Length: 139
Image (cartoon, rainbow, N blue to C red; front, side):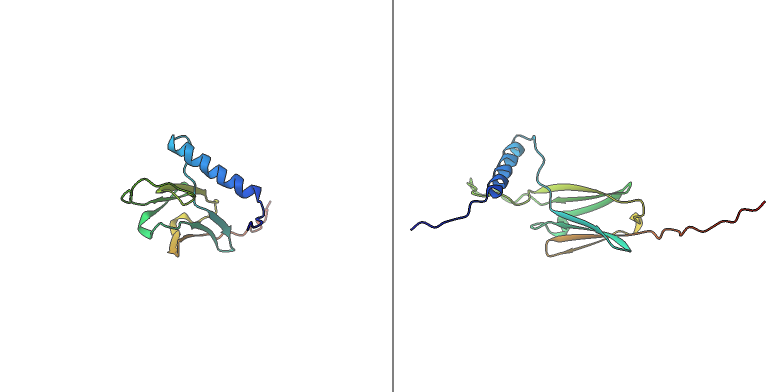
């Protein structure tokens, strides 16, 4: 008995894009896929959340330089198993590097990071901006 399956062309395009990326990576001409990230701001801080499933806290490295936050991840090479034939290969590779530009009001001296359930959360507090004050002009 045949079943009816709704065709979703964008899913097919996504699979094709991933396969092309993998092929180009093998030749060294395409960058590895980057982990998904959200970057948002509250009244008091800027928050970067990065999905890094499969990585452990010890595999991650954070650095801040010149108002640029750099997140690197590198897993140890697992013992290679016998030749595999992938039907689908979407997981993050063994390493990545992702950079985020921080705004001028970011307090880069007090950055904090938390790692929980495969999500790296980086908190960057904001520096309190001085409120403008009126200056009297005297003659």
